[in-house]
Length: 274
Image (cartoon, rainbow, N blue to C red; front, side, top):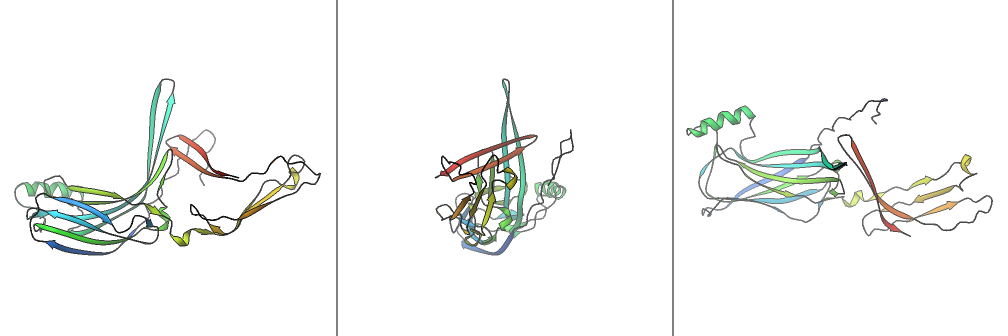
């Protein structure tokens, strides 16, 4: 925990990105016929991607003319984005903050990414017909891939101010020309084995507080916390003086706490009340 001294604002350092893992690749040329125009597409085998499990898919590439490129690359990127709008008198200002969670590049074909200076130097060389590159023959290609997103990256989330997004980005590094790019959002969900938790409990009052509130003990048994899953629990109330209780309610709420710059926001949304 980071605590602020009196009169001083302390901003905790951003966490280091968690590494992901590209397990395997399979690069195939599916057709030698040159297509009409270049295109780059991403396809996933399943709609939901479990954290800690394998995410499988394919990159589909149409390349109309044999030419030199630096490489065909994939980047697995996860980040938390927060956006808070602050209203003061008649003015509005927006504070944005991005926190990287995961960033994992991989080269499917060609050379590894170069530094900024090497990119400038190779661009000059490419303009006069030289420079380091590999030849990509005209035709259609398919690259199968398998990725593992670590559970620490967290599931996808979209709230009022904060969003946790996971995306797979593909690009073709073309010398002395705009790169060909595309991206696909990954709907990351908790894996089946992560959906169970151990029993937990909370106490609402200590013995010293008996004079104002009857103490309550509330607990939730181990269960499945997926949407539609079952939760079991109970509560215990001590009424030493025979207090009359008007009602007892159990409420399930979703709490969002966001921070951008020096501004914070909190919101509770009631999901279920019984």
